[in-house]
Image 1 (cartoon, chains in turn brown, orange, red):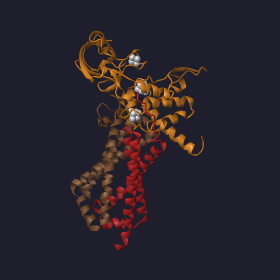
Image 2 (image 1 turned 60 degrees about the vertical axis):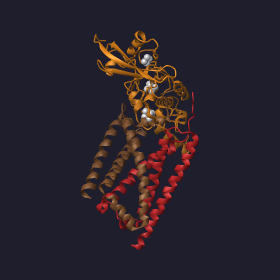
Image 3 (image 1 turned 45 degrees about the horizontal axis):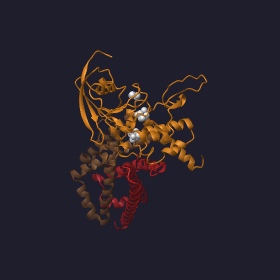
Image 4 (image 1 turned 90 degrees about the vertical axis):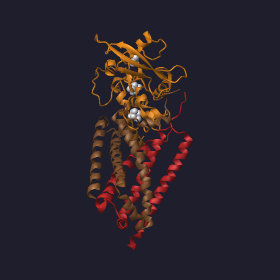
Length: 128
Length: 244
Length: 124
Ligand code: SF4
Ligand code: SF4
Ligand code: FES
């Protein structure tokens, strides 16, 4: 029978149409969760360069200063803010705090994430 | 009711037997202040007697007429045509999601009803336990124990909207968890906590709040799930320290 | 009607752990960020900087703590996502083992790395 729950329909988790801010938050949370997990794995592997001594690590750092990699890092930072701030929202609402303001909390959290990422980006690209 | 007439293209999901569902178009004239269910009934009455759909009360009490209207869960007997389309526009009517489709717009809610029984969700509740704590409704304090119908009309809209129910039917779903919350508020014996404290219960919900957005009957299932979480955690902590 | 019985795979305990670990990640990551991107010149630490930074035992402890919290939060979260797909109980069993091995592997590797870096201080 069609239309019933099926694990193969998981891509529809990411379909934001006809949905509410709560689901948009969920979509962002899930995408950033997967992205950050991947980043964590890569980060741990890359830090292994430290064990190979100064040359290996410092040349890796030189690579990390190229604009493309920096942009990738900024994405990770954005993901971190979105996931972290929304995580606080989920934690609060799950303990019954602010449940009726969850939409407002989502928009505030998203705005904070954008501002914070912009500050980091400005710092990374124009100051550092 | 106005004397205004609209022409609306109803796109109705049809499925007979094991065939694949497809949309069939019916252009009909309606009064925009009629309800979506009225349009569906007119199609059945004047265009195609083989169309199947569920309804009974026509006044948001039986919970039978939940459908997907232009992609969003609606109780079709109280959704005006005006609120979902425009003159000359289209109006897509599909069966609820996340339930097996029996035919056309009819879905099988058997598993859902079984679970409502499991959590002892009752249709008639004492008035003082019938509302959400944040609501300020005054009931007569005349010493008589008043009862009323529970808010949840078991329409299934919330389950249709729930993204977790989309991928797994082992998830209890918003209405059932809300039912458990109501049961606990009446019986206060902690039994409901055990019924929902598992991977297919309150911990599976990822706080999308879709259920509360589509609920036509003010149950606010997501609020109740969040409240259950808080209370289950509190209950477990107390248990851990030996208080029962 | 296929009727699956509820599975105790994620109860109050694990869920609460995920939330608390998540909040701890926010706190420690804040410190991590500031150190790695604000304090260090050029935005990133050089090898020598890293080794010097790791001479402080508090730093080693903090990094190890951070590692444990972040790895466990991400793996418990990943597990939640997989549970949403309603896998059969047998797959859940396999998944639990794989996640445990990956998690402990990552932590052991990370601790080794932290101690290794810290031990290089004398060569500076
Ligand atoms: S809040 Fe929970 S129960 Fe409600 S739609 Fe979202 S996942 Fe489903
Ligand atoms: S909780 Fe609301 S949407 Fe869900 S079945 Fe009950 S009345 Fe319908
Ligand atoms: S027909 Fe009874 S609720 Fe709509």
